[in-house]
Image (cartoon, rainbow, N blue to C red):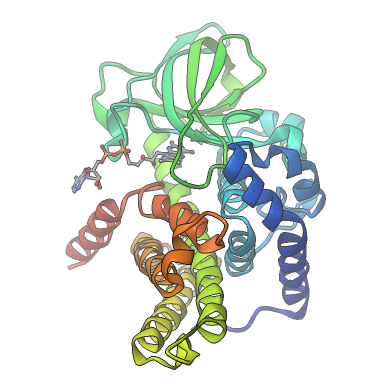
Amino acid sequence: MATAVSEDQALLIDAIRKFARNELLEADRRWDKDETSVWEMLPAVAEMGLLSLSLPEEYGGLDCDMRTYAAIIRELAYASPSTAVSVSVHSMVAKVLGMHATDAWKEKFYGELGSHEHFAAFAISEADAGSDVSSAQAVGQKVDGGYRITGSKMWITNGQHARWFLVLCRTNPDIPRSGGLSAMIVDGNEPGIERDKIHGKMGIRGSETVVLHLNDVFVPDENLLGNEGDGMKVCLGALDEGRIGIASQAAGIAEACLDEMVSYANERTQFDRPIGQFQAIQTMVADSSMELEAAKLLIDRAAHLIDQDQKDPKASAMAKLYATESANRIAYRAVQVHGGTGYVNECRVEQLYRDVRVTTIYEGTSEVQRIVIARQLIKED
Ligand SMILES: Cc1cc2nc3c(=O)[nH]c(=O)nc-3n(C[C@H](O)[C@H](O)[C@H](O)COP(=O)(O)OP(=O)(O)OC[C@H]3O[C@@H](n4cnc5c(N)ncnc54)[C@H](O)[C@@H]3O)c2cc1C
């Protein structure tokens, strides 16, 4: 079982909690209304070290262990679900680059990833390749000194301002599905890149989401991650940690919902007493509190296993599945406890209810998490 975080880690988490609640909460409400993005706060986010969480110390990073990282993402999500997912995706890409980028690329750029100008994005999904990402069709054609990529990537978080895109593309059309795919890091400043903002999202409207078009974009050999054909391995490995980020995002939203629920239950009076004295309301509060604690324990366990180098994809999948599904239930109850008030945007739970919805969809839907869990168990038998 996991132990408590160290004093230094607790101080870091506490500083981020204060920053998020003081600086991000109101901004996040505005991004939701205006459909503007977290980008305006990104210099301050970088200044807090939040883009350096997964960078090693030798590159100026905080080199956070996964348990501390999960607690930080939860604190961010409590105040700003949009900032939480933006930081989570950036950190996941930074981690993958640490593991798979060539020394030549790292020497030039790796240390820069802590700055907002080097914001990173993860581009694997396509319009026709979502859950079935191994059917991706973007082409990476070998040319002298590198590759030329042509294709479109769908739903790319951080995509409006990202400098770096981790792109999955087909380098060998003769090998079907996973075997023909490679992962490479694409410089967003290269000619041939277009970013189309996706408008009208239900929630996390402060998080940037684009369709990324790559029109004959040059990528030097040194930007290949691993070997040709390793693309799925590189990307799926990243998702074990990414899923802990999304699970933590969901837990942070759930925690905010629970606090809002409890405070409203104490303050709202009907039938001459606070509604918190009605057993039906108490049941919603009690179930939410229990589910949130269970989610945190599953997240902590999955993070602890990664910190111990014990590979167990089903642990991350269970944490993501349970934390995101229960957070959706908790957000539903938070609206219910608020009655009509909870149905109007002025009340924060209305936004949280919309923000939490996507957590059961991205970085693998709940159905895909169940496949990951069951496959590992059946294989283990
Ligand atoms: C706001 C947002 C941000 C995103 N950010 C990123 C990003 O940064 N990078 C990126 O690459 N992608 C990103 N995505 C894409 C996301 O990961 C996909 O939407 C997700 O993987 C599901 O793919 P899909 O939307 O094509 O749905 P589909 O795969 O078409 O699924 C539709 C339904 O069918 C179910 N289904 C599919 N296959 C199976 C099966 N074998 N068994 C049972 N059920 C199945 C699914 O669970 C789902 O319920 C983002 C998506 C959103 C909405």
